[in-house]
Image (cartoon, rainbow, N blue to C red):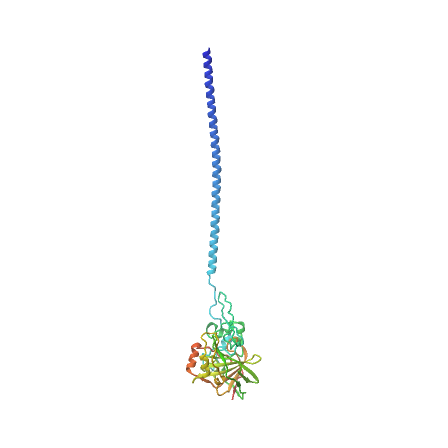
Length: 380
């Protein structure tokens, strides 16, 4: 009986142990499954974050590439605009009808290379330049001792010349104040012919030995004379301001020009101008002209004081008869109201003296202008 009881107890103990082991195994399997689910969820969450991050990176890179492409296109567009050449006017400005007419000598005069020279200057501003891009502001004018419009060739803010695009036919287009060069009716020089012979009042020359300065102003050789020289004519006194040279002579006598001319520019107390023109022809040497050549400055627009003195009475012809008419300055601004007195007898200068000036200015004379019915008087 006792053996039976022990057998039953042992059987129960074994069954209970097996049950405990089974429950333990079930719990372990359940824990493993839960761990796998958690891991799977974590992996899925991590994968989602990575995918979003990758998409954000790709979007950011695309945005940067788009911006870089737009910037590159803008730079290329700016480069094309900057590199595009500006359109410049072609050729010199067309001369107006008045300019074309004024630049043609009268029918009776032969076609001489008479170019444009200037008389006394009444404050001409000098110039540089130009209407090409980029725009260049004009350089301040060089102020000389006697700012007399046409006589002071150095004081020139609008750059004019005797040839080319800025030559005589274009002067009026260079600046508004030069309008008279095309529209004036009393312009100089002219072809002097058919003068009325009368007993003209002699010109009273009150010239004396004087100190002087020489300047090559880029248009001519100009001589500034010390105060004290003057002329008296028609009841008025005109003080000599300066004199300068042109080649060939600007004025014609019955259609003929001389080798050179010297223009002596005077001004009265009211600021009115009077010019005495002395024609120069080839012959013997002229001492006063040589004194000027001896003191030529080495640089343009630099005034050089001469060591010696000059007496302009020696530069005048023995015969003091003259032609007279009302005209203008022969350089811009071509101001009118200038009293002209052209000596009838030329003065001789040597071929060497002519050649020296020709090396500096082969031609610096304005073409003859229309006389426009002006009265011309000459001494008997």
